[in-house]
Image (tube, rainbow, N blue to C red; front, side):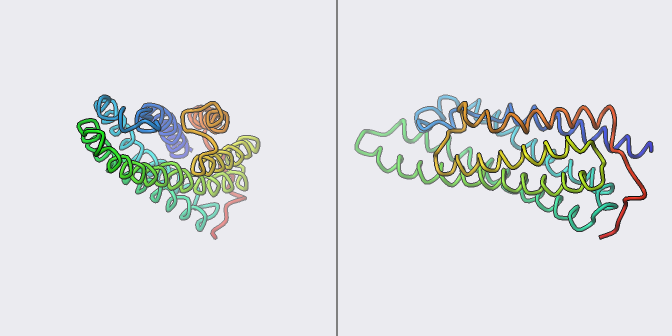
Length: 228
């Protein structure tokens, strides 16, 4: 029981740290359509955002590793899948961070060029931004979302948390994955009311889950444990 409480509290704390780091990692100048003009003048904010993006990597992976010893008792195969998707999300996150210095350099060069040379940097910029969007808004979100669907399925079947909280998590992750495709096809923008509406359910669910884990912990039921 003491071990379970410790695991639950650590997992809940990691969720809160992830939410805080995620908010602080948002860099509006990089997400802007006018990023070539905005990134270099805001390079310090971009680098600070990159630091918080980096912190998300151990948080992503650490959360899955902390829960794995408990989850594997209920479904080992899906638990491994959950950890695997979290590692995948961490790798995508690192790739996105590596691109940030390139954004700064490209923006600096763009601002220093004459009008006749701008088309070259605009083309390179569009390609670079598309690549980063594929990594951050599709790769990271889909890997995290798919992993979370496995997590909440285990939590639901094992009744480790209230059923309504598991269902809330499944719906929230489904919505944010749909939002990632909307971003990809430019139906919505990252900094927009529409995107906020689609992500708020998951953010609220994670806050509630974190509080639940810290205060209540996972409800282990030995009679439901299976080894698959």
